[in-house]
Image (cartoon, rainbow, N blue to C red; front, top):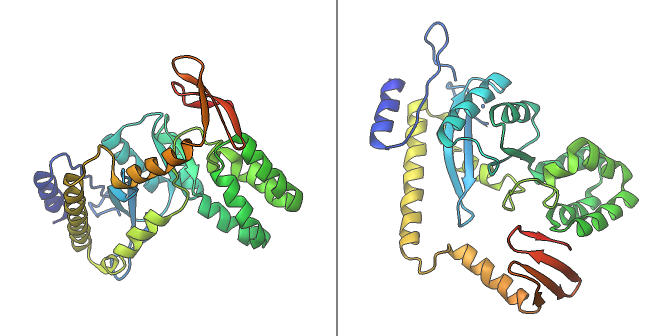
Length: 284
């Protein structure tokens, strides 16, 4: 029945890709939303963020257990659908199996850790809730100079936490200014938790009913977003338009002097640096 369902799913939704793996006895081989009831297994989802910062799931999978083979299978299928590029970024918890398989399957992509997960691990490991405020300042710092200032304060007050963040977690995995790719402000598991909440009842369904529930919800989301998109009068989404206007207001207080076609000397408040708009760099 499941193969027929997948066939009809592809027929009704052009460019949809489905895959089913079975064992040597032709039994369905089913990791991260845990399914309930008699239908065991784990539901995986790969989701991206759309231009309005909304959750946009692009791949779903049901697997039998959380292990490297299962993750490898899911990620390989995902790669077949979206490809691999150095502009691609994965953000997940710090589970070793996920880290291993992302680096193996996606050779060009970058991988970061959810900063929220790092914060929770830090609180549990060191029992130091007072450091969390300083930690989020470090996470969100745009400039290395700003990052170093906050880290110096953490190191002075919580040396074990500082050592953990630098050597065990690694700066480039969770901090904005050290991350080698573009993670677009994704630091928490909010999108994942949103999907978990959406499926709180459907997780008890048989597999086909579960997939039907997911398809119905996704169709509702896409139709609503299409209606919003049709009504836009700007090439940007409403959220990005608002962000740009807010940043424009701040930029009005900066003093700029053009040095050449793409380079500017920018001053204002604590900022004093040379901005290269062609290479997206700043000496600050």
